[in-house]
Image (cartoon, rainbow, N blue to C red):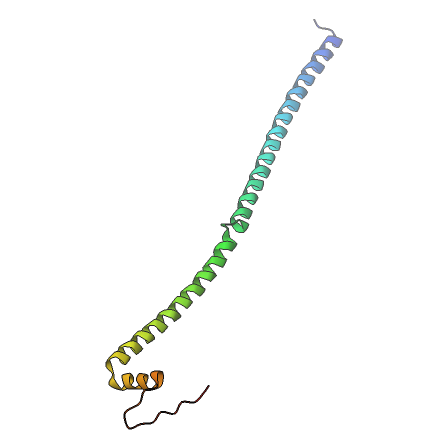
Length: 124
């Protein structure tokens, strides 16, 4: 039969083995938590960098917004010029076909007059 001291040694050996197992589990759990934290931090850093590039890069969102504004201004300018072109085309057709307009252009632009008229030209 084992003596009391031997029984105590066995009990302490069992307890220390259990304690070591518990401490190993604790280490494993804490190591896993640490790895998860590190992974999440790295993921957050990468997402932040990507987000900043999407916003502030040469082809980022701010540049996109500015280009859209510029495009709108150009479209308005184009529409204005197209209206001017349409008005000028109408004027050209009118000048070519309307005898009154032909006479008006000849009198004002070229300083011509009918045979019995006098043209007064003033210095500008």
